[in-house]
Length: 56
Image (cartoon, rainbow, N blue to C red; front, side):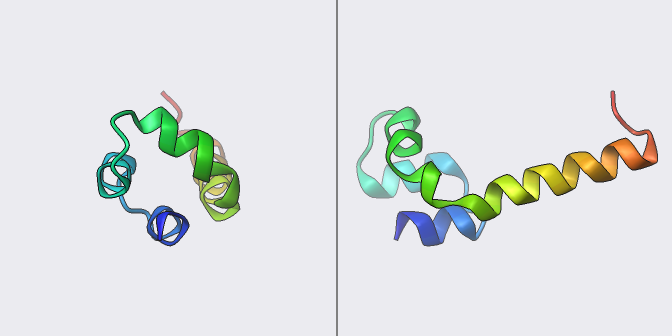
């Protein structure tokens, strides 16, 4: 469930709450490695910013 929600872009705090984690770092430590699509999304987003010169 956690990886499906994170891959779908659901807020990390919401996922952590659903799992009963009091700290989002727990959720990240356990599940983030299983969500490579989010890392690709971040790289793509930054690439688009750099290409358009909209980096602040």
